[in-house]
Length: 243
Length: 243
DNA sequence: ATTAGTAAACGTATTTTTTACGTAAAGTTT
DNA sequence: AAACTTTACGTAAAAAATACGTTTACTAAT
Image 1: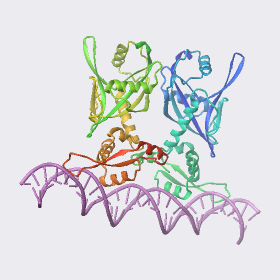
Image 2: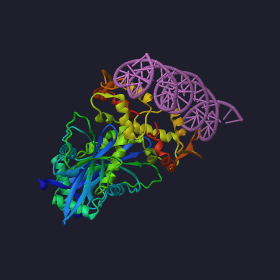
Image 3: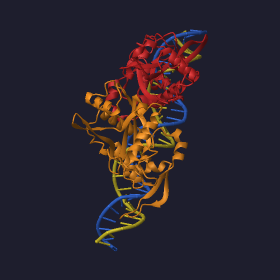
Image 4: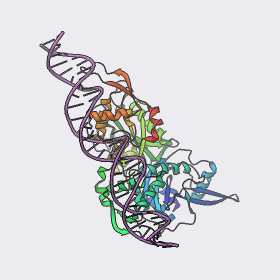
């Protein structure tokens, strides 16, 4: 199995999770014993690719192993190729020990991914080493992984303005205020509720349903759904998305 | 020299050239004799990277070798990793013959670049195999290079709307109509001259000079320059650029 | 010197979009 | 039925985009 790894190219994935109140990143805890000393490293999920494996498939595979989820949104966003990126030497040593390969230089292709953390209905079953960290409490990571997280966040914010990414973080039927909150948390500023609604109402591909929120002690909100088909049909028209 | 090549990773560059009337791509003619048969292959400029070379430096190096130019705008835009991308077999054979390496799978990182073709003042000295092709007359290329050109053009058009790329294609001092023409050619549609000027006049980082066009048989146009410093200072404000 | 030709440069009215607010409506809980 | 909470609708003002018409500054030809 190990013999089939390509020791020159890897993928790393910045898995963003949304839990109704904040944006988080999924990181991997790695406990590693060297010369009797126990070390604790934290890193992005990622690995060397296989000899004949397309990169996107490597990324999917790693994501499924970590979360049990399939068909998750994944987007390639960068290349990290500094010949010295595997420093400091002890991190490189760790990599060589764990792969049993004579690792020299690894160019990594980065992906980001979007997951709804607490939707009761998905079958998210995290692997034991995986842990969610709030986006502004990311600890020090190995190699250049902090830099990759930052780059991923920049791209996420940029693409959030032009692509319908928000629906990856919403249930099939959602309320406009949920949609608004996702924008506010990811973009990092507040939006005027009344103008936001007006804007959404103009979008033909966000369909109001004849269903309402239930079990709340106030006026129940109407539910909406995203019509992806209609969105794609109108695609040539939009250069931006919302906000 | 050859021994230092990394046979797993390459860069390919889509060099866009602008010559006042149309957009062109720089391609490489390769004449190759195999079993007495002469073959003519056309490809993107690109090569395997060196063992310890950053990708951006490989791209710069290749570009300078081809054009004699330095400090040209270069932007990484994609990764092409299909394990079968080096097909058909005869192309792979050619690659193995010319590098003398046991090439198996190559992942390529793509860049695009912007050059003003006919500005008398630059020292463009094309290498003999290099040839400009109008963007809609690109011939069949080896491997997946046609696909890379298409992807590069898509990205160029997209980024032209949000980044100040136009100034890479203009002399230091330029006329508004030159600027407009660049937009029209790259975006592929015409713009209303009067509204375009109004829009530009609002941008504080496009500075009108007290100089005019000379030697023309009509009202001479005012010259302008781009204040990059001011642009960067205002950067947080713009999500889009012009048009 | 006047006129013709050419492209630059300015202006204005109309429509559309964005922004900033105020207020009513529909539920539950007490 | 009164208090509370959140949804939902509306309107006026400012800003931006669009669609045009007209004037200006120069050279070249007569």
